[in-house]
Amino acid sequence: MKTIIVAGTVALLIALLGTPLLIRLMRRHGYGQPIRIEGPKSHETKRGTPTMGGAVFVIAALIGYVVGHVATDDPFTPSGVLVLLMAGLGLVGFIDDFFKIFRQTSVGLRSRAKLAGQVVVAAVFAEQVLRYPDKIDLTPADASLSFLRDFGPLPFIIWAVIMVTGTSNAVNLTDGLDGLATGSTIVALAAYVLIGVWQERNDCISFISRQCYQVRDPLDLAVAAAAILGACFGFLWWNAPPAKIFMGDTGSLALGGALAGLAICTKTQLLLVILGGLFVIITMSDVIQVTVFKVTRIRTGQGKRVFKMAPLQHHFELLGWADTTILVRFWLISSMCVALGLGIFYAAWLQT
Image (tube, rainbow, N blue to C red; front, side, top):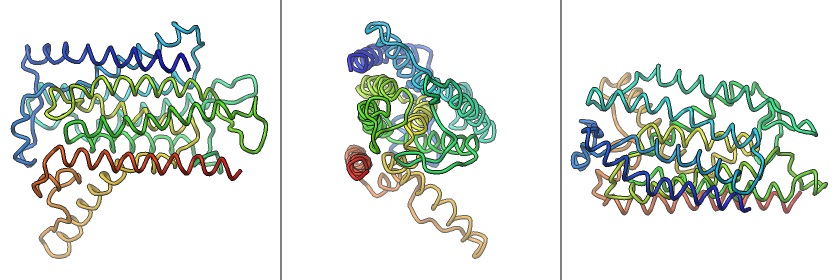
């Protein structure tokens, strides 16, 4: 538990103090966020706001994780390290953000190039988590589908790539309103801190029963989640509306990758659909909008829209809702999804 506290606290302080330094650096060089022409008109006031803030909390999380282990003399584990290496997705996002700033356009990497980068990072992660067996031959992940525990084999690398790319893109879609993606990710990460601690206290080495969890390094997964959580807290201070800086794809892809990595290593892959319910809702709004538009355009020659604009948060902006109203209500939805997911996790433990 000391490692969790130290890692989270150090990451929080680095992000809290480091973000304004990046803000000043970005402003000095004129590196600001381009705004989509077709976006809500209210976003025009955000043009030029510094972006790529995700770089700060990715670095803060990595330093917090390392300092937490060194300060408490707690050994590093493959599971925790591999989850934090999902920050490699942040590099893909950084390249995308850099092209946007350099070209001063809302379009960065081409969609195929961006997806290819995500697939490569996800595939490397999927291959690595099946390695590094411990004394009882547990690896960071198993080639199985899981909800609360493993329950069936599957083509793991393909499934992991789908999970990682899907989750990272879902967080990316959610990052369209000041503080929305950051705050929603915080509550999901808090859930994984609790899940990791619970699995540690009920692992199959010290608690041999039907209720135990066969998860390698659950406590270190909680440490990794706490480090990212603390970094997000520090960043949210500056990202809350009106945002002084945006996380950009650098941050959203890294956060999505970390959530997917935590779900895979804690063997709660499908539970992530509930814990990250807000991300699912927002992603589905975009899928529904695009699908209905294309189908109706083919049938009638004129595409129809279900929402005024997708993703969903922009629909409510165009309805006239204040940004803070949308933010708080969506945070509440995210919190309810996390509460439901944790309730299912605990209830299943009681029934086994």
